[in-house]
Length: 356
Image (cartoon, rainbow, N blue to C red; front, side, top):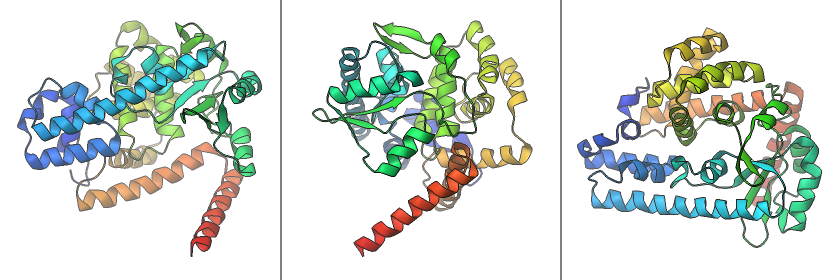
């Protein structure tokens, strides 16, 4: 892999795109693959794709162990969804929880740090009260951070169960309230589809759009290859005329055109996702200005994939920093952002001074 990114130069990507190439790898290449799979938390997914291939014994042990760990977390997530059904009458489960509850094979071996659910904004107070009464507690108790989440973000401060130590994020939207995106949530809630009694997930187009928003707008991109793999799987899973016909108009209608454009572009470029040419042409209306796109074409691949050589590490660090700044700039308007970052820097300085 050079500073000029090429997907075929990254062995992990070759395996994700063409599992049968596993038999061609050298010991050194397997070392790089295992390290990158661990950093990106894609070991379980890689095992699911390679389990029928002839693998070196050490590779088989490492990848199968990652799969077992991911399966433990998937089952734990399903248990938490079951417990929430006893507390809440209706909620939408997001991201990994939705994939697990819907029985998608994308969820097999996929690790999950926490469970994300979503309810309408007007339900937040009652939903939070019910959760606190049933053993959930706030992880963040700092007054400023509590106020920051409740005023600016698309979720309440994270919760943790006092007995099971599992984490829960309670959302009311798919983008922060302070975000430059202005997403109308009513159409998203109304289009959600039932999975089981009281549990829903986003409609297929909205699953894809939320995945793109999470990766290219809400998150920091760095090290998030797993999120692009999720997006690739969803696009392949819903590959039918009705889905493709609805996707771009849905994105434009919800104000999510730019994240979708990036999602389609980099899924195609990095993972060779089969996207109809007509859809790509339709998405061109959401294309950013040329200088912005040139930066993203450089930064996104280098930030997504852990670097294995010196020159790519420099490119990755530069990309990480730029995309980190970008993510905060997209998340908040200028004055609130400056105040928030100033407070974070002051807190970090005080912490380091106390340690010294």
